[in-house]
Length: 122
Image (cartoon, rainbow, N blue to C red):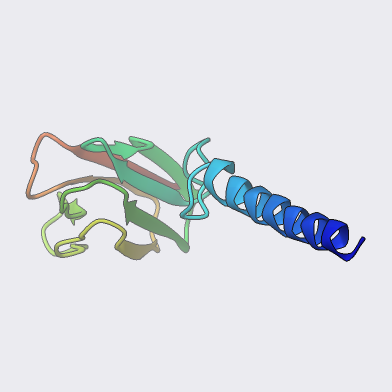
């Protein structure tokens, strides 16, 4: 009878471990991000693009860019000196707060074909 209980306990532990592993590996990606895309005031750098290409925000809002590509990128304002992230490796983030209305164009200085825009409204 004791052997039967030992087998049941071991089986329960194995099932619990399998369930935990399944939840970790099959619950979307493991970096805590949704597969649905970036959140409010956030731009993802992924697949050599800025997603979204154009983000609309209010004055005094901070935008966060996150590099989710396997290669390095920058977030560099077309208006010289306004903002420049420097080199962002995979997983790095950059933030900038926009204090005036307008349209702000930017690109990746490493991959100049990559462009984005921030539209700031009152």
